[in-house]
Length: 608
Image 1 (cartoon, helix red, strand yellow):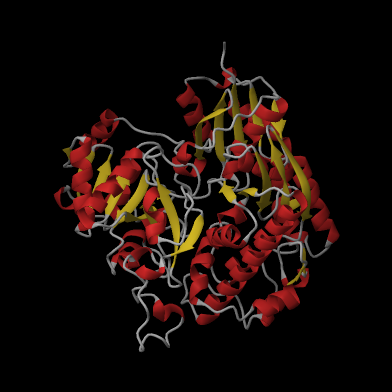
Image 2: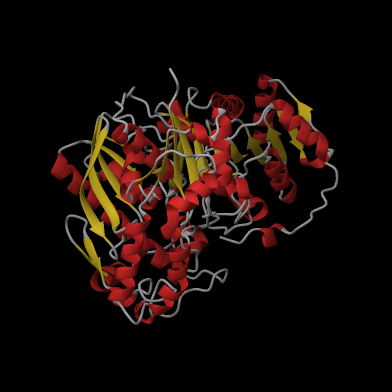
């Protein structure tokens, strides 16, 4: 019997991606930015599509269906009505966006067919939040679940909840533009001096340094929040409808002055603003989750949409919400829409049944390219690199020893991750016991803000020995507190400290992965999903007694996560990473030939 292939595509806004199904099974997925090295690349995902087709050994003409993750005409209707509704104030925004829409985005069929060349089959479109909902439910381990989607905006919807049963999903309620939790959070991202659509996680990381002193102002002036989680935003304080910025002068007056300039010094105001909007975001997430449970009576929850990447909020929903289990799509943002539309076509359009096994269908999110030993060695030889090729056991032992000696290791192994998190295949690793590891990795490796925390990768069976968590968290999308017996209490001298002054105060016996509020963004690692990474952590535990390693994405600030051996070697040589592991090859910085840098990475990558 001939296999049926379905290609899903998300593109033209941000985080373009492609995903390929074979008879309903996810066999490949990738974000365009990883291939083009352009962060958040929004162009048609040509390279990602090529990768997916190559993985399957097929051509575009072999595809049964191609799906697109939202409906451009419906989105254009919303944009046009929004500008007309605030005319003439929205004219500047329309002048900027209108011609692009009319010239490019309205003729989506033509664009897709030109890009896919020899594909002659049907083009199918789903609504944006349906794509998110499908990406949340269909790969989940649940037969039946509540589905919650939260983001900036799709066509008209900014949030939905519904139910998934078997191979069907039904959205029951939606929140509509311009009232958007994602855009509210992005307004504070902009106002605190970070980049919208990529800096929201910085606001989340900055929040524990602040106090929630602006929560009352948010509720009294910016939003009218209802008990069911729905709300209205007071558009007098925002500028995304009528201008080219997120916030208005009235917003500035309410919060004590203009927005922080990017790269300028952070003040206590920004920390307090971050804490305040984070608290509000969590409250909305909890209310929506509780309402969905109350109206459906279902005690399992699936989530997607950009707000579902707020792992602090996810952790609160898990701990304080009414659900027994939750599952979050690891590519929760727009990239995951490519996966969602492909699965909608398979289950809804093709009426194919859905079979659950008690485990999710994401394959650990390891859906990107991998490279053979031969490809890696050919590359290293081309660079004149000095390397050792080791068998698996010797390699794991050697890398564990280097980590225990506080060396920083670039770890490149197996298939690249799909989604924004490095999950142990394109990661930079360190010793979590080291009190200076966070500062070293932030300043010398990542070249990023020192306040930002790093995540722990922990052996699945040891998670409750380190964190107040019992469940799996394979995709680094849940935050939990470090166990009380591992925390280090503040001294009398430290008790009066607040804000950024607490940054370099050790918080636990794994200080490199313990945030200022004793929290951590946990990734649990299982032998079944990632045997090499699991065995490396287990070997580190054998040597040190610690079943945790520091895990951060393999890139510098503003750079997409590395995809190829060349990307990894370049990042390794540009930074203070001590050791690079490419598959079975170990490369030590001190042994390498002089690196002749052609371009400064700060000029190559736009800071995010």
